[in-house]
Length: 541
Image 1 (cartoon, rainbow, N blue to C red):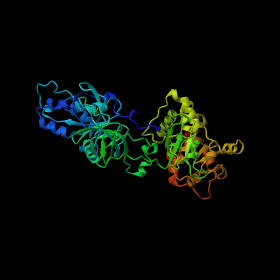
Image 2: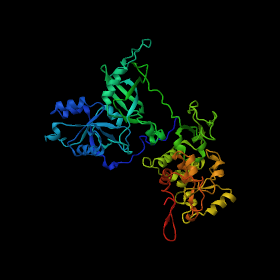
Image 3: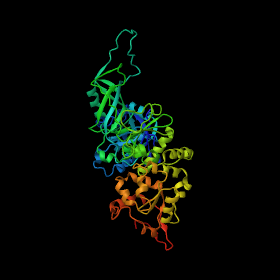
Image 4: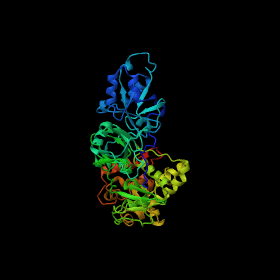
């Protein structure tokens, strides 16, 4: 069983307009549409023929007008508003998303004796009712979701969709099997290309989700098409490498159908129907920078290295194949989850954390790396388990959070006074500690030195009791190394000692670009200590 942190799954609540803003509509079967709008048969027929996988709703009532306004507010500023589909969902959580088309007819503008003239109605097919778990002749709240509520510009485009097909059975249909068991069953045959063409016509510009069903007709037979799997198009590899969805490897479950979407059609039961030219969606490949993590209850998490970078005790897995971690770590068959691949050349590690807690840890790390996209709230009931996980992983920022107001960050960082150079030198020489000075910050790396990718000897040899900023720039070409700094930070060096501090390399200074990047990352949590005159002291000033 593959376990992943469902950071954007359908059961995660979204930020956005509140549930109180949802609009109320009466649900009617789409078969009733012709009878109720018989005064405009041409408009009704045109709407039905262009419907595809969409539903229809009236715009003569308050909710219909509000729904149109809501949609226009959401897509405002879009490059092509006219082609932006109006999307809705029922219930509180958008498990499935439905394209909705406004119904324009004379009954929208003309007053007649029909009691439903001003009533808000959504017309659904039986498949829609099944997908969205709604009943006809009931009133349902509807939420507009023409854009995703997680802050994205649009739903991701789908590059491929795996579809499983079976023939729709009706209640009055006789069983296909005969009493004569020796008689061979004549399976109906369909063409995969025809099914793909109907699916594209039916779902173009719609948003499809895994396990959603679509009803189409092929050669006069109704076919039920279930979305078994989806693949999201990757347009920019460089950009994807730094996006949250790329780093978290969140399993895609939803996306928008475009003209470039490829349908992979196969029979859900090969003994029931035959599909000529069928094909199944090939298995996806894991990224090359994955660490296979096995939890103590035997579950497997493929996690990208960038997600594990803040975990100090997993450094040798994050840095596998580099420096002193040249060898790729592996696990024995007994230690490794039976679901984890063993032939992809990626490192394997085991953590003494259960799968549910590790899932929460990954959500927490995502909130650290992508605070604008992911939030994390620590539940009081999980503090002990998360604290143990933080200790097992060396995830100091999580340990700080678990100890709340009396966090270890608060207790270890000196906020009321500067740290003198003499103290740093004494602790390095006499207390068996390892303190370094980086751009005026004093960092305690004692507990981490054995995990240093460059080995435990280079820092004590080159970087003690000096300003090691230039060395830090020389040996760390990426900002990934910045992730560790807050975990080691204990305070600021006294300003009078900054002038005495020897530079790490003769006649070489850290570049201005590097210093700006470093300070932009650390300014948020570095302490600012007031002198008696009230001046704030910070080396970058």
